[in-house]
Image 1 (cartoon, helix red, strand yellow):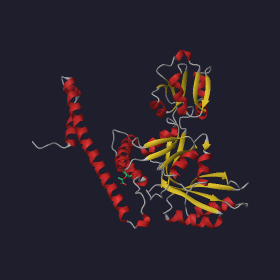
Image 2: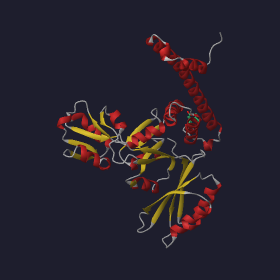
Image 3: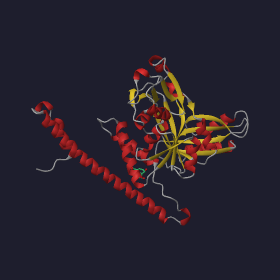
Length: 391
Ligand SMILES: C=C(O[C@@H]1C=C(C(=O)O)C=C[C@H]1O)C(=O)O
């Protein structure tokens, strides 16, 4: 008899009904045997994929070696536009029963280990460990990346500028709290580019440690913003327990180690990092609360097919300046997705605008709009074109 294909084997099993088997254990054994053989195939295929990624790495290294000496730099292994395309293709061809996004997350991790084989990636993020920025870094780069906590947003910029970290992850806006000024200001004193974005739904957990005495709770730690996001839930469930604001959710989780009478509010990464128990999940008052993070780096990113471009412009101090800046976008049919204003320091009463638009700077309409804005402003810098968040 000829060897059956994996699809035929699956069909046979799916057609078998539990009730056909007088012996349930026998059927379970058979299913587990089939799972084992599928696992073998998956493992071989993942290793085949990893070998291909290693070959890609060799080509990248050879390309640099062949280029004229003046252009010799370290090869760039991480390709965000390609990763975005891979993840979108996974979701587009997915037929289930695994949900599109869950399948893409599995591939996210496979790509993360493939990239790590090509070259380990050191990623600086606004720490400490267990914060939502840490979760964003892992969501974007996968768990094989070497994520390194930094104390401030400025430190993340510095670490990437110095080349100690290849990329950085910083929060830029929260759907209920607004923009993170430190991050926008970071771009005014840095030449780093935006090379990607991550969106993270903010889900808060009520965390306790194994040694916590639940009937003796006297303190709930969290970052001030997280306490605010769970205010209603806390008023209903723990109206008489003191709420203590600390520097981050990660720090809140860390404190439970030595205290039996305290609980913390933090996300999943903090729970896992400090081995805490989620007594209640999703306790945030607004379940659609989302934070957006930016990935910063040195390189310009090629188009992925679904991109965003961010620019910063320094406007002339005159009436109607902003209207003039926005006209070329509408003229060239470029859709603006956000605009933020920041003071242009050290000049008093002068402002810069951070503008995000749909499209890549290589798209003719985007580049035409930017070229038309240039003569209207004191200064214009393209912060980067990068793939829109996929997951
Ligand atoms: C394999 C490559 O290198 C990296 C790994 C990728 C992958 O595992 O699919 C994709 C893009 C790069 O971040 C590549 O450039 O294609």
